[in-house]
Image 1 (cartoon, rainbow, N blue to C red):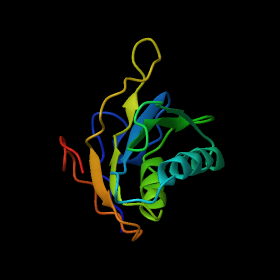
Image 2 (cartoon, one colour):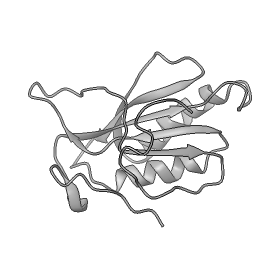
Image 3 (cartoon, rainbow, N blue to C red):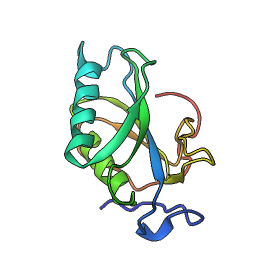
Image 4 (cartoon, one colour):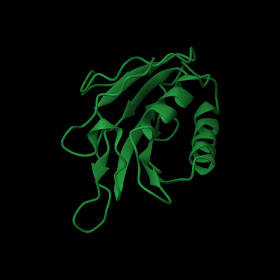
Length: 144
């Protein structure tokens, strides 16, 4: 069962939130995954977002180690259901590494996303499809 630690100050309780987004970061250490896995994961993440009517921005830095960015609804408000859907999907992928998902956040005063390292929900990826409960700041700093 996936339970999400809600950000009570903004959009908690599963309520839809207009003009909100969440951050994501997937780190796949070299030597733990086959060659080309990160390229495939990036394309699959894009398809995941498109299939669910999510707009996204994905960073170009990170090479074969890191895939990061933000996601929000194209139409309608972003909800807490969007994060566990991504968590469950990425946990089921055949990759080894670390996943980091941020809480729902409001766009800044200029309507922009503020990139940072997400720390609100951090869990290991081992291809098992299992996602641990959200533990805020579980692995706030450091790598895999």
